[in-house]
Length: 403
Image 1: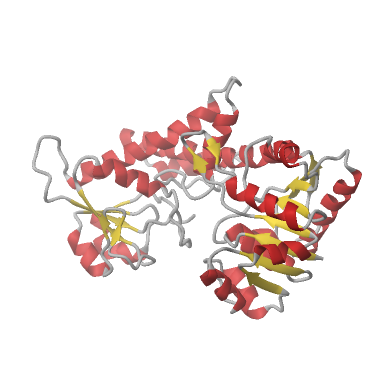
Image 2 (image 1 turned 180 degrees about the vertical axis):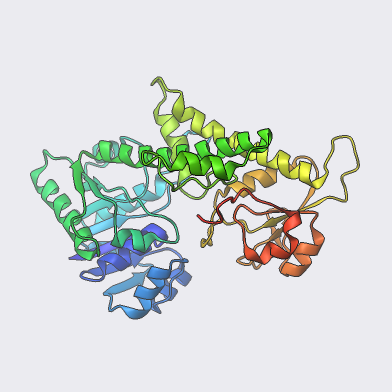
């Protein structure tokens, strides 16, 4: 089979690597630098398995900026382009997905389009109606950033959403699921087929549940902080219940990253007109947590309203949303920073992935020792042993030093 994969972020690149073990794959991107790196068998994103496969495996993978040429020869076109949330429209920006679908429709009417980008509930059905192209299916991904290929190699499940009344399309949907399983290391993968709208809902409800879990343990931690209780003991006691489980329970500054913030907001928007309390509360809980963290940091720094706070410097150690990640899109720590900034307190950043001297309006200090000396308080969403010598300055809620 010949695949074209639109987008080489962690979803698109991990799928390209997985499928190119046994199929011809064209990885399409608009950024020449990323295309060049992939063709040199170097990963443009941080993912140990992707890096290993690119350097060690014999993959039939070619990256290109020529989308039309790739789509023209493809049996399947996988769409893995970004769908950022537009807070004004209360809707994902699906323009990049629609652009790919439009181009494929012009140059290869026989290709099956598989949308992997996260989209609103009902989007695939509306796109089929709008374009008249019935060769569109939706298959959600369930990947952790930094471990995307590992999760593709050992998936929790494979879900494909397609119109079951379209016999030919449904056969191709089954074939796509078969090819995903064929590239995986895990055997006997649970595989579910459903309509595209239900598959879209699975994605949003899954991520919103994960966000709810993060928010729950963060609220538990907030309670413990204000009541003077040891949160580690309470979380451990709660989590030994096998129905709850000792995982995904380490407190943080809030859920962040590329998926959870936008997916929870999109599901909340999809609930318009539907009675709900939990879904909207999850979004509000994350805001409340970031406000609480900012207030605790200011308290530790000695900030007081009406006093001279010009000498206070808050240091931000890493912008990344979690350990072993180089992505800081929508990281919770940035929400904390904005709240601190509103008080007029100075903020400086240490982030080794940044080459610039300014991030937004915040100075970036590139030398770690200088950064440590400059700051009165250092906030770290995730603990790092590099801060051990200034631990009295550090504010973190990374109780278990993991995740």
